[in-house]
Length: 113
Image (cartoon, rainbow, N blue to C red; front, top):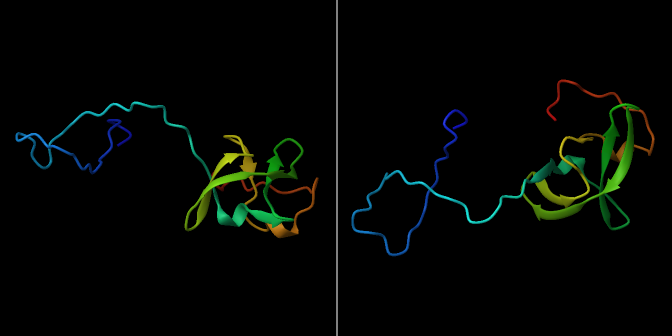
C-alpha cells in the first residue's frame, strides 16, 4: 500500500509461539539491502552471434545503439538484468530485429518508461 508503506506477505514460521495467531500483524526488518531490479519484456531482446543485446534510445539525437546485456533471470514474459541498461534509459521493445546502429526513431511519449 503506497499510502501506508505496508505490504501484505505470507510467512512460514518455525517454532511458532503459542500466542501467535493467524492474521497477526507483525513488523519485519530486512537484514540485507534490496538491489533494484532492471526488468525488460522479452520483446526487447535481440540475439546476435550468441550475445544478447537491446537497443537503447538516445533521447537528444533520437537514435538507437545496440548494447549487450547480462541476464540473471528469465521469467515467462520478461527478463531480469544485472548489467547493460541503467535506470531511466529508454529501450526499444518492438521491432528490434529491423534496427540499425544510429537509426533515427520516433519516441512514443505515451508508452511507459
